[in-house]
Image 1 (tube, one colour):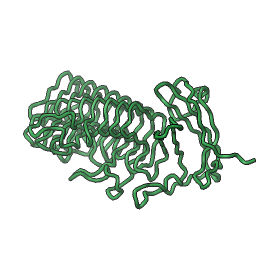
Image 2 (image 1 turned 90 degrees about the vertical axis):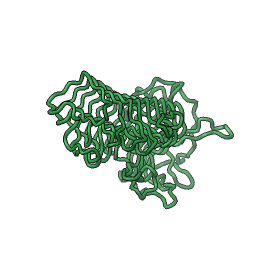
Image 3 (image 1 turned 30 degrees about the vertical axis):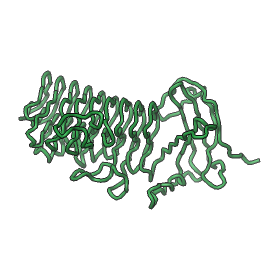
Image 4 (image 1 turned 135 degrees about the vertical axis):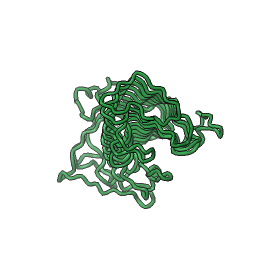
Amino acid sequence: MAPQYAVPQVRLPFMAAPSMTGAVRRGQWAGADEMVGFCANTPPPTLAPHTAKFWVGGSRRDLFVAVVSGTPPGGKLLARANPMPTGTNAATSLDDAVEIFVDPSPRAANGEIYQAIINAKGLDNGVTFFAAGSASVSGFKVTGALGEGILAVAAQKITIKHNVVVHNDNGGASSGWFECSPQGHVPGDCGEGIHLLSSHDSLIAGNRSMFNSGGILLTDEFGPNFDNTISGNLVEDNLYDCGVTVVSHNPAALSSKGVPQPTKGGTFDNTISGNMIISNGTLGEGAGIVFASAVAGGAAYNNKVTGNEIVGNGLSGVTIHQHAPLTDVSGNVITGNWIGTNNLTGDPGTGDSLTTGVLVDNGGTHKVIDVTVKKNTIAWNTYGIYNHSGGGLTQSGNIFLHVAVHVKK
């Protein structure tokens, strides 16, 4: 008798957290429920013709899912998906992709079903959290999305950990994904590899974000973005934008008198620590880490950059840009970092065409930017700190190695 399709239902077994590295170590999944076979998306549903196993387990806080799947007969993956004319992207599910639906309350009248599709060719995003709390994604490779590989919108206490996020941001201005559209003179970045949008108290840690337009993006379009931690990531070779972008797109972040309105908007009180940020923005305009506002009324303030290694980026290692008088990029602290040669392509908006470790520029607005730069090692640059802050720079305890001008005024 041929194998029959059925939707599996399990009581979630508790187990110790496995190592979420993308490799399935069978001993670590011994406490999980193991199932065999995936459904092929055909009418009527049938078992897929190639071998697939998956494991499901959890703790009181986390759900753990692992999948090992063979290739289809002939060994070649089918990947034809393009955005549908209606913008639904529905054809992606007809390609070779692993798509998982989780129904935590199968008997509930109005329950919620969670979906993940990880081979994201043709989709706007690979993994999306919308208004979610205390959720996580770990151990996945996310690739091929038109926009972000991983996107969290209006979320809190999200954990994005130990993922490989590569070759996303493939849409253009005509793709329909809003993050791909330019904002004034600033070209769209399609959301970069990992994007926290108006989210808070979340963790991005131990990921590799590479070969996207940019690496990691924090913004505030729909409300404030705050108290997030970006730690221990490798952010490398995102060629068209910054390694880590902390930017305000919300004109309500400041009042008409320039006073912060933290309940309405702003990107603030975030920590960027212990990351390796290498060779980003070399074919576009991208810093290692940037703080900026793209609109009048925006604010990216009181953030901390500490313990990072930053080298080989198109713009300065840490860049603070003030584009308009009614913006706030003050209160950011840059401390304890190792900053090598940066600003390889020059910064046309500031006139700084020479290698630079840290750049603070008020854009000729005559507004003072208060910034603290202390206890960093800055090496192999023409300028250690390019200071057009309007008198707001506090710098102390920095070590300058092979730097021609320690502080350029």
